[in-house]
Length: 72
Image 1 (spheres, helix red, strand yellow):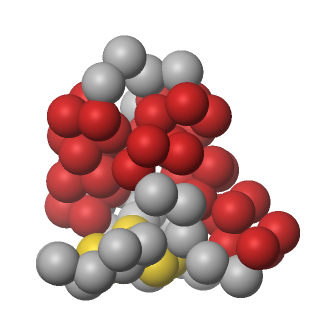
Image 2: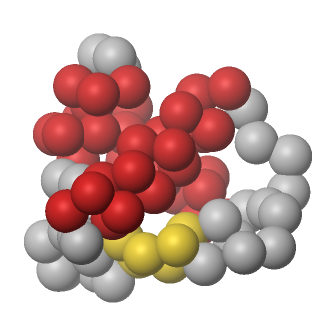
């Protein structure tokens, strides 16, 4: 995987959570699972981080699909 643009600490933690879930269970985590694992306060905070990660080309999301996150 090529290195994404500079990521914040929270974005790194979210990306690590996604990567680990895919390695361990074969599928991406839910937004709620990311919220709990990373320690964010709301699902909207997770969505904001996912949008930023997608903008920085670290992940690709499939709209309308549960667990629709994959690593870029």
